[in-house]
Length: 525
Image (tube, rainbow, N blue to C red; front, side):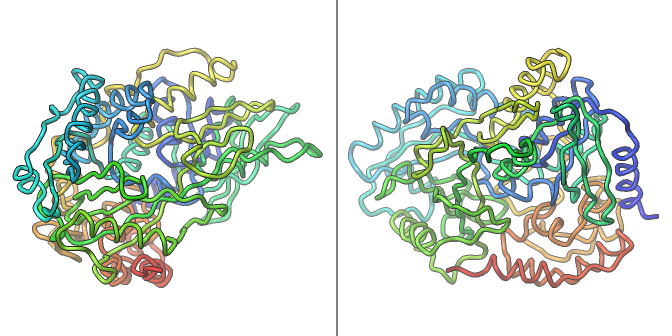
C-alpha cells in the first residue's frame, strides 16, 4: 500500500476503533482546525472530520489578509481590533513561511483623506503596541506613485502607508491539521458527520461516513463541537428533539467576490487599500503569489452553495472601482480567476437583511442537549475563537479544566523564515520541509512554471503523502493555489495531476470534474 493510503487507513482505524474521545469536532475550516489543535495541545483526545477538504469552504476563499481590521476601528470596535492585532502577531510568528507582514498604501484623492486616515492608523499602531509590524507614514504624491507603480496619478493628494499581514489561507489550514495530528489528534477530510449520537437527551458523539469507502463509524465523545462554518445550522437541526419546533437559523451568509489579474496592473510589493469607495465599500488590490487580487464584495445570499457564483453587479463593482484607482484599468478579459467565498455572519433573534448590520464577531452557543456550536469571526482570530470554544466547553462541564495559551507560541509544521508571499509560489512555501520535498520523485519535473517557482511533480506527490490530498481539486485548489491564480492553467494541468495523484493513491482519477470547475472560475457573469 502506498504511503498516502497507509496514512488514511491508519487514521480511519483510529477513528473507528477508539471507544471514547474527549472531543469530536465537525468542520475542517479555520475554526474547527484551531479548536482541534488547541485541544490536542492541552492533552485532550481529539477527532476532527471534514465532509469535503480542509478549508474547502470559506477558509480558502479569504482576501489573504492577516489583519486587525482597520474598518472595524472606524466603526469604533476597539476591542475587536485589539484582539485581532494580538492574534495577527501570533499567526505571523507561528508560520512565517506562509504568513508575513505586508505594507499597504491608502492613496488620497481628497485634501482631507491623508490626514484623516493617517490619524486613525496611528491609533491602529498604538493598539498594536510592541506587536506592531511597522510605523504608519504620511506620504506625498510622489512617494505614493513610487510605492504603488500603476496607481492613478490624476488628482492624487498623497497617501498613508501602514502595515498588516498576508498569508496563504488554505496552506495555513492544512498546516493546522498536520500540527494537530502531530499532537495526537485524528483529523480526516472527505469524511462527513451524518448523525449525532444521543443518550438520555444529551449529545454523546457523532456518526461519520467515509466519502471514499462509504464505511461508517460512531465516535463517542464527551463533547461535540459544531464548527461547520456557514453550514452549522444543518448540524444544529440534527440536534433538535423529535417534534420540537425548527430552530431559527444562526447564520446569514454573505458572499465576497475576488478577481485575480496579472501584476502588471499594480507592480511592486505594496497593497492598495481604498477604505471607502463611491458607494461606501472597501476595495483591496493585494499582490499575492505572483498575481494581484482585486476585491471584495459583501452581498447577502439565501443559499449555501459549495461553489457560489458571483453576481454581475459584484464583478462590475470591482472592475469599475479598480478603474478609478489604477492607471491601467483591468478589463473582463484580463481576469485570470474569479472566486467567491461565503462568510458566516451571525444573526441575532433571527434578523435578516443588510449584512453590514450583522455581527462580524464570533458566537459560541451550547444547546440544551450539549452540542457546542461556533460560527462567525474571521481567519485572523481563529486561535482566540478556539480558546473561547474550549473555555465554554469547560464551563459547561463537558471537558475538565485545563489552562489556555497552549497555542500562543506553538509553531506549525514546517515553520521557518520564508520568501515574500508576493512572489510566485514555489518550494519556499514548504519552509523547513523544502528539503524533504526535493527528495521526492519529480522534483525537477515542473508541470507549471512561473518565474523560478511553479508546480512540480514532487509537489503533487508531497500533497498526497503528507498533506492528505485525495482529489485533483485538493491539489490544484488548496495544496497548490493554481485554481485561484490562473484557472485556465489549472484546468490544463488536471489530466497530468490526475495521473500523478492516481499513482500515489493507487486508483484511477477522472480529471473531468476539476476541468469543469476550473472552467467556472474563468467565466464572469
